[in-house]
Image 1 (cartoon, rainbow, N blue to C red):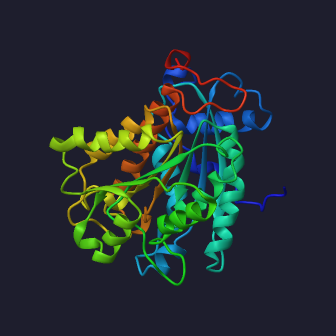
Image 2: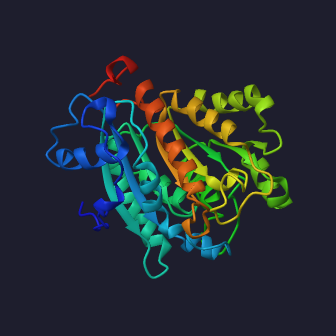
Length: 343
């Protein structure tokens, strides 16, 4: 299959301080710059866990949903925030570049993302999609359905979000991806497995709660997602994980309080504390079933001191380290690698 070309990443995005070239000095920008060319000749990835990033430069879904545009600039902003962070594991990394939505043709952009994402999922234990608005998640869904590795797998979706995003609308948007998934799974004879943590009751209509109930969606509200309630939260995660073969995690940064994540389309008036979101991410990553992550709704134009981008980068770092150390779902022909192999 001939893939539609995507925009290569400007190498200046992956930049930061260099303390040395030895593994103990490694930062994300060194992994990205040092291993991108090696990945091209497939020499450095042998025997290592493989990690991939692809950007989805889109805010068309946010525009259609009458939110604050700006998420199209997020993928490179997330890379810049990730670049100086320390790396404490040895894994091979691929940065596939950015899929860009052009001329407001969201559907074509989502199809393009899916075409590139399917092979990435087949070749890497963990792939992170840098959104983009939450319309990114539908492109990710299409991509995982084009993955050979996941073809026979039961995939569950864990969404950390203030919103169900089960909206009924004439045109797809950032508010519709999980209803699109539910209907596509139903049409294909698959069970729709969807859990949402962080729902803001004032930000979701009664109709959305009724849709969630009709689809048997498990959820906890932002008020229920307190530090004191962490055991119950992680039990909800475990119920999803235990019933599936692989997990698609979608992190909408508007689940966080506005003070932590001001740079989003819809800043939260309440939100779930970062320590809780971080622990959820760590927990699902350690399950050995995490294969796909969306990080969505960063809008750099509204960010303050890169606060939202840095928070997202911290979550990506945790997810990558924990998932790869735990041994994500094995690639065809390869056994998962234990944490002892990732010194």
